[in-house]
Image (cartoon, rainbow, N blue to C red; front, side, top):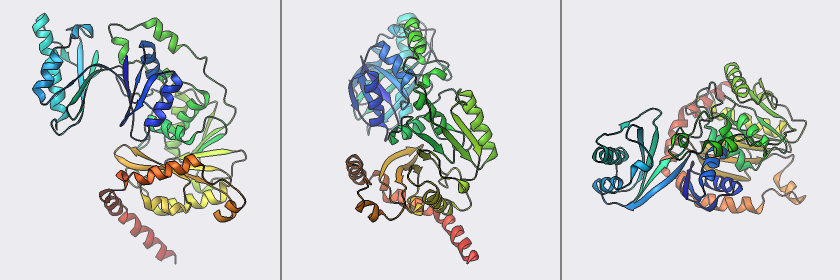
Amino acid sequence: MKLIAKTFAGLEEVLAKELSELGAEGIEPGRRMVTFRGDKEMMYRANFCLRTAVRILKPIVQFKAHDADDIYDQVKKIPWEKYMDNDWTFLVDAVVYSENFRHSKFAAYRVKDAIADYFRETTGRRPNVGMTNPDIRVNIHISDNDVTIALDSSGESLHHRGYRCGSVAAPLNEVLAAGIIMLTGWNGDSDFIDPMCGSGTILIEAALIAKNIYPGVYRKEFAFEKWKDFDPDLFDDIYNDDSKEREFTHKICGYDINRRAVAISQENVKSAGMSDVIEIEQRDFRDFQQPQNKAILVTNPPYGERITTEDILGLYSEIGTVLKHSFVGGDAWILSYHEECFARIGFRPSTKFALYNGPLPCEFRKYQVFEGRLSERRMEGMEIKTQEERDRNKSFRGNKALKSRENKEKNDNELSRHNFKWGDRRRKEN
């Protein structure tokens, strides 16, 4: 059967690779989604195993519609008793990319009416809408005039792993955290460091990847467990299969200057059962020391958006200084928002990815830290960029969506207060 895995913009290729490794067929990346084919077992595995999927949808009908009445008529033709009973609660979600259907809530409302009227006319009773924990979730996707009605097999978004006990302000989404780690290519083959770890999400996702533990192990339930054709024995086999797990012999280290953040991240690590591989301590990033062993650094510093600091540009200057003096020979990956912040780091990135952190268009950049000048290292034969990175950078430059004038002006305006404080502080020091 055809299935759809939803994800975030920029992670489609990572998700496609995950699906290929799971054994899915007919994999086709799209916009914030990947379509694929598989049986019931593959649908269960996709929910349980995928790190970069937000939800897994099972389409049940596709058709063309020109207005809301067309949608109502087509949805009412579906034999809904195959999928639910009239005493079940249901919820309809809508995603709309169409000039003809501007209001996603109205599209969802018409689908709800069609389902309710179908049962009223066939059984004499209408099912109720359940806003929290419904028995079944229905998804309608509209692209121009193309409409897909699907069952949501996940339920609560898959980024809700289940291990998080608490969080600091603006915690990184678990799917995005897993995605950026997978973009680095790290697979547990060296030490891993996040020097501004916040609530510890990047660290925990790194540990899951390193030990190849699937994120579904923490979930309380999936929506497909309530379906009429649910196979509990099949799902138990998937849930209890730990044959792909592996040992991790390196270290995963996290630091944060905030005492409360350290306490929260330690609780989350304990909840995830990763205390044996993750070490977290309170430490100022400025006190970062050169790792004794080979390590990769992945971090998500404050942007000056939901988390503010008195001197945001000064912080990024200090990041560059610390990397230059205390992370020689390592690869540092940084997720951030403002071009001005990246510029303060002082290194030229070898590669970068366009991503979204919530509504914010961000970049995920790789910095190779080495001694001496770039020209000297090149003369010595050091490979600064791989051909894959060169090709990716060309593609990145061709994507102007995240570099629009509107976003740049917004960024400049939002940073103006930080620039003023930073410049004022410099004048006082001088």
